Image 1 (cartoon, rainbow, N blue to C red):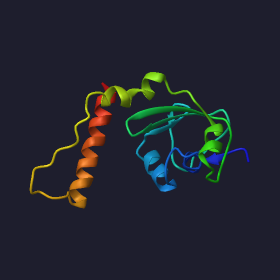
Image 2: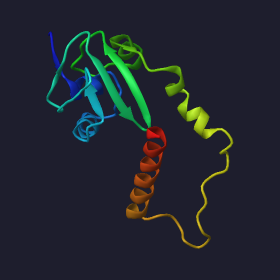
Image 3: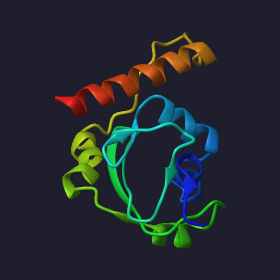
Amino acid sequence: MDKVRIDKWLWAVRIFKSRTLSADVIKKGKVRLNGEPVKPSSNVTVGDRLLVQKEGFNLDLEVVKLLNKRVGAPLAVTCYVNHTTEEEMNKYKDWFVGKTQGEFREKGLGRPTKRERREIESFKEDQLWDDGDE
């Protein structure tokens, strides 16, 4: 085995929870292979560099071992070298400091509906990405 589909590899090394989620992120253009945008069907080989935008973080990974089946976390981390900068890894800590208060919802509104929850999550994701670009 000298090459594996990129969506399959990202799922197998536990970067994403599902292969569908992996493919969706790739289709949105949030994954680059050796600096170039890719399709979910693109192949990765040993030595390739991947830039993955996931939940507001920009991960920089180098492929060390190819997998096409999902493995446990201890084995998964041996399949790539994480070149992500320390400041990028600490982005969440820096952003979260001092924000210990929970979210607020007006009294009497009840739980958000599925549609409202999706809008809230979309808004949060957009905010997180906007802060990282500036």
